[in-house]
Image 1 (tube, rainbow, N blue to C red):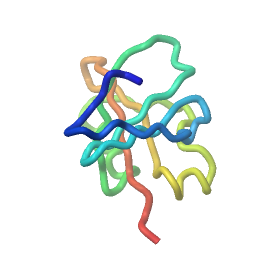
Image 2: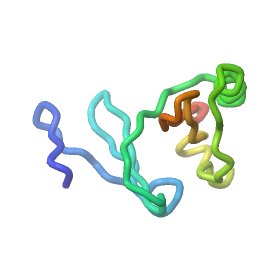
Image 3: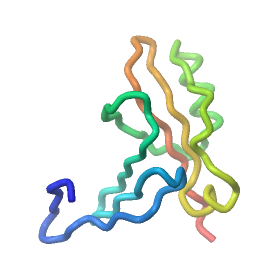
Length: 103
């Protein structure tokens, strides 16, 4: 689909938590894409152990956190984890992702 191929493995696209995108599964690479953004841009997501603590750290360092709901309901959070969209102190976009707790 996006011309992605890693060591002979093609990505698997599953419905994402926003119902407007996909979770992309490749060996050793986690990814995703979603729709509904006002503009198309790529941005990295950083995996964190504690999303609330990471959000506070972004703010302490002069960044900002978007107050949009991209986390979904409890069932979606249990499957995909929690997400927040952020900007650093220079306006660059990035995301934070806390993976779901293993059951």
